[in-house]
Amino acid sequence: MTERRASHSIKRRLLVVLLLTTLLAWGATLLFSYRDTRHELDELLDAHLAQSTSLLIAQIGHEAEDIDTEHATPLHRYSRKVAFQVWEKGKRLVLHSASAPNVSLSPRSEGFSDSVIAGEEWRVFSAWDETRHFLVQVGERREARDDLAQTIAENLLLPMLFTLPVLGLLIWFGVAGSLRPLKTLSGQVAERRPENLAPLEAAVVPAEVLPLVQGLNRLFARVRDSLDNERRFTADAAHELRTPLAAIKTQAQVARAATADAERRHALDNVLVGCDRVAHLVEQLLTLARLEPERISRRDQCDLHALAVAVVAELAPAAIEKNIDLQLAEGAEVRAPCEPALVGILMRNLIDNAIRYSPLGSLVRATVAKTADGAVVAVVDQGPGISAEAQALVWERFYRVLGTNESGSGLGLSIVKRIADLHGATAAISQGDGGKGLRVSVTFPVSR
Image 1 (cartoon, rainbow, N blue to C red):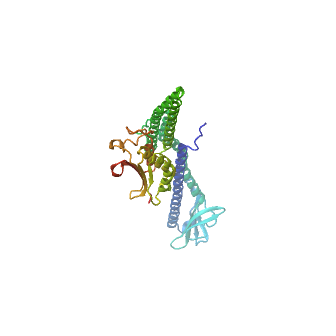
Image 2: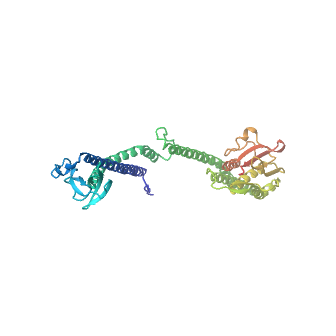
Image 3: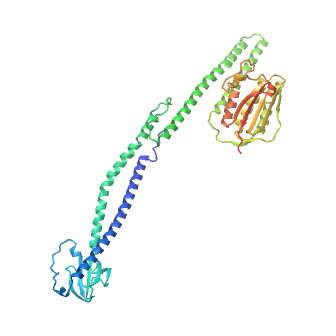
């Protein structure tokens, strides 16, 4: 199957986000700087207009008509965009610059004002002399201010146009270098052989990648443990199946070679017993294999007492066959979060073990009760019991107590322990009533 290409790239996304963020931040800074500079520029030029007006008022006199300004040489490139007028009593133009129009720069006679003359915008400052005989107006074309502001804006934008590509390259190399450990890690994982489950090196990875490496190492450890368990389980199962299959083969050979009907029938009966034993072992193995998932996907509230009633009814024929009194203590409904099918298997194994190892005519008693610790399912028999040394071993797969004549696979209590662990329950073994027999209990947590 062809691998699907990733829908997005972290490197590309980081580059786009960083560049856009930088561009927006830089653009906002430039806009703010331009507006602030333009405002300060207008304030400065307005101050120059007011100051020029004051100087003209201080120098002006009755001889103003004799001053020649028509042929004055411009001393600056902005000179022709600045003009002044001197009006006698505000009505007769007695003096003006060469760049000034013949009409009043502004209808206002005092202060700052904006006006339009012959399609051109002017910024004008007007003031009277002390005798209010002469009105002086100094104006500046808006075009000059706009040209100056445009020059400032270009000077601000040009560095950005040259710097942004360089910044993009620096960000690209920075992002690529920062993500290189992740790329190296993915390459190491991709090149690994399936049987290589050694932990990844976590000492040199960045802090952001460390949780991923630690998670992968935990996953490798779980997979390694699972594979080890499967190998051990397969080896143990093959060992356990080898003996009954060999016995069946032997009895089949005896039946084929037998000449007497009684001998042949006895051999065939042993074949059937061996088949039953293998079938039971295979069923237990399959049950244990189905319990390998680490958790139950769903837990519903179920009635443990009702489950026990069903299991007791199912195993009653086996108890009657051995003349065993199988009892279930009466009690009210006991509910706990569980998977009914699995808890049914747990109870079946507990009661089946008790029936198998109890002597003829004895008592097997099951109880389901709610205690301060939780919901307790217990099975008590009157069999030989288990020594204190062996009680810690009976939960292991294929372990069987020595000295028993009953056939079994050694998986019953292992399955019980596994189901209990999946439910967060606690399994325990102790002596039966009066120090005789065996008591096996499983305590399920009950949600509040």
